[in-house]
Amino acid sequence: MPDYRITHQTVYRHSAPAAAAWQMLQLQPRHETAQECLDFQLELNPPAPDLSTREDFFGNTRHYFSVREPHRELAITSRSTVRRNEPALPLPGLSPSVLETRDRTRTLIQGGESCQLEQYLCATTHVPFLPAAAALADGLDPAAPALVWIEALGKRFAETFTFDATATDLSTPLTEVLENKRGVCQDFTHLFLSCVRQQGLPAAYVSGYLLTNPPPGQPRLRGADAMHAWASVHLPEIGWVDYDPTNSCFAGNGHIVVARGRDYADVSPTRGVFTGSYSPILRVEVTVEPAG
Image 1: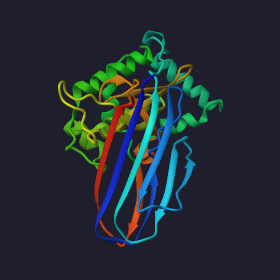
Image 2: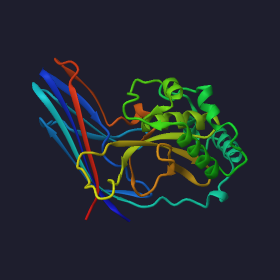
Image 3: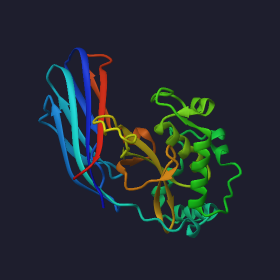
């Protein structure tokens, strides 16, 4: 049961003083079956006396605050300590098939037992139902065990797409990712969701952190990590199974969950507005390291 320390700093710097700011944050790691958030501290500069906390529809923790004084810089620093276990999964061959999962999910929704699953079957702004995305599963046997099928789809992603941090931004459509075969974790997760949902499987977007190891002989650089994204597929009788299409693997104890939703818009780490300033310069630094 490894423990991790995460430091996440977001800094907005303005060329001229901003008159005020209103912000929403989703930075606090979740409490889940395989994960416990042992400590969370949030530091704001300038300070915000109206900081409040609430839980959203998906069970994520949100922080809200405003800064009502002129400022040239807003610094948001979160510090977390998380205990993360290896998620328990059945043997892949013992999972229900994709066909069985699709039929069982439909029965659960129609019977009202799990009507909330339906929202994870629908297209969204960030997860359009593109025929080319569905075609990524062509040739994969829907009669195969679902975990085997998911792993095979992830391998196909690895063979088809290349990670390129400069290829896309938040506004890049999935059609462009499909055409250029390049992108980042957010792109690959949205694409994976589009493919899986079109096969009739409920799938969610997960934001979080990933413990990355430096090259042999190289020190771990503080601030060099980043937030990560992966998918979660719901299998009746098993539950939610997290899969990382960027790294072609099921999520392990190095995947630290912050938020879950339908797509990036539900889980964005920071969101808000400023008055009296335009296009601030944004700097983000993340460090994930073993505790102790």
